[in-house]
Length: 259
Length: 259
Image (tube, rainbow over all chains, first blue to last red; front, side, top):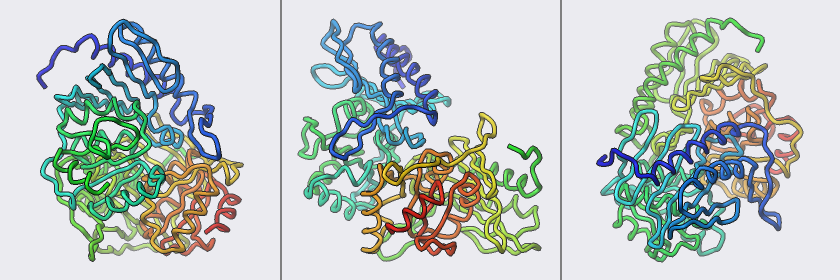
């Protein structure tokens, strides 16, 4: 940890995440209303806690100069070429079912991509942070550097994905099947928490599809700060849903040949 | 909560779970050795922390009079017709990958089945307890009664299973597919924690296969104490791997017609 003082942007992000913790902590396992954002028999839930959390974060972030974008409300312009990107509850299904693995995500995104990223688990009191060069876990035990696991061969790699049901096309399902064959173990159900475990060296790969920008941009400075890489399934940086995160560039390249 | 004083059995169980927390807390996200219990290319991990945790619990439970059975060591006889049943880390894959959703399970089992059950999450500090009549969540916030959710129709039910990969036969995979079609949402990755969320009314159904007695017996007094039911896929009480847990008898009967 080379950095003792926080920048004004970092301080504002921490305050916005503290505000999110208060709202989410009140809503977790309590009564709340849930709406279905999807049509045609699909289920894409959003709760009133998602909306209240984003509003609490925006009320803090408006004290700064950057624009604000989020999952649940309209874009707000700023006076810089950067914007805060909010996913108030990534893993709404986990939140709804009482599982403390959902996360509040916050990124600072400029023309070159995200420069700061945060993933906060309010119930566990765990906050993952990264700036593309370094990554940290901040908790009641203090702030410590985190790093991905190095030198893992594909057949010993532990992989994760949120649900087999997000692999919607035949091509995606075949890719998942090849990935399961090639790796030691496939874990389900982690949402953003899986990417944080990758950054800590507890998992080696996360492969998903159907992601939105606010699902992955805030995580990229954490994963890359910890030594990992985030790519789309073609190896590029244009994220249109399909994402590979890996502990090392070498492992990512090996996985891309399977997808 | 009608019960103020703990019985000697309840007190011993709490002490054994406190001992487990100390061992698991030291091992979580630390370096440990992992062995593969399975053969033929399968992966069934057990860590040295599983073994150390069970040994710590046995050292306490030996102060009582009941026999002791566990996943990781030999049966120890007692002087009663009951025995303690231990699963030191249910969800070893979650534990290995840094996800705080694994649990330490402990049951007291007699000729009529389990009379006491505990499921402890050491990192979250959450202990679920049940005696078939009542169920509780014990945490830093105190001890409170928990209950399953009532009056949920099958099409609004939220279901969970640990992994689609535990449905090994074509018949099992078809059953999972019918269940997904019939319910609102299917969640993955919960292990024993899903059964506790069922007991709290956060989930309505857990359907699994491949379970061992130590995976389900300690959970039954919690689920049934909270108002739910635990059955095998034929509706009986003989657990040979396939398990249905539901928030109500009515919902369980509806699900059995799908399996």
